[in-house]
Image 1 (tube, one colour):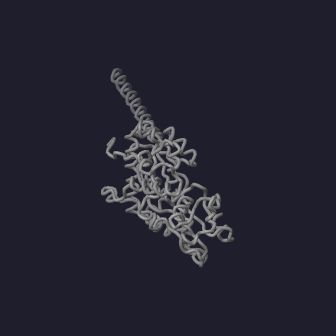
Image 2 (spheres, rainbow, N blue to C red):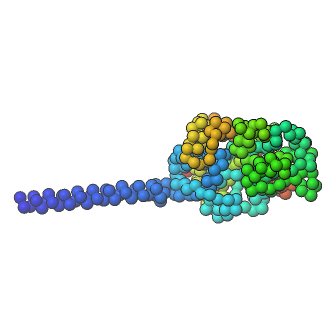
Image 3 (tube, one colour):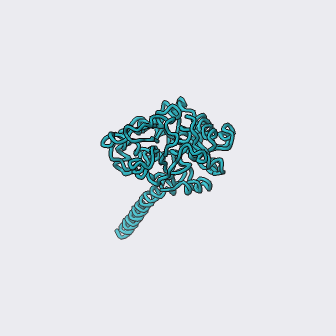
Length: 351
């Protein structure tokens, strides 16, 4: 009996130790899952995705729906201005960002980054006061246009638009004047007060101020998603760090697969996408119906679009490089620029 008691006691002790170890292991697994140190093939990465822009929807959805995690990434969404993005891309600490052809001159200037895919179409509108005599680009000669920054995408888009109408966008020629405001609402105020004739705005402001309660005050002069110069072409692209492309090409391939899943999900579920983005405060959305209409207008690629290569990313890069070259914003021959600026990713790497 005494021996049996000892055996029973020993077994109980062993069982207790196993239970304790099991609990510790479970606790450790939870911790690892949160940190990304052992549960993710590619570990933890940072992606700029806290600017609240509606056109960043694929980032929010890939994060929220677990598409980044499915492809092996523990993603932390961060805030990052243009300079922080460039530095991160150059040294590889930020593997990928979304951006528009505003980045093209930066590539020409030596920022170590390449276009690797398209993100969506159209997200900029130019608005004027209701009843304005300005109806076309040709009417902008001698006018003042509010923009968020010189060299920014609204400024570049407006420059291309007026140049194609035979109006010089160069400041030394004085045929059109660009006035910088740090905030879109300040652009609206300047338009209201008559300090400028046109406000070039990122969505959703351009739509907010031409629909609903403001519909009798302002109207759309130009819509990037429908204007013949820009319609059907990517305005926003995905840019990957050349360092990551060289050192970890599988990582770039996996990231693009995550973005593709998000784009396809948004294409199939625009209302649900807006609900998620709004309810979880990825973007400050007051009018979900308007937001859904905007998301649809961006034409996020569907699974079929991806499978059939509906939009040729390289061709869109060449198109906009040519437009920017023609107005002097790029100095490199467009065909040569594309050879440097566009990298076609093998999406099967690392599968």
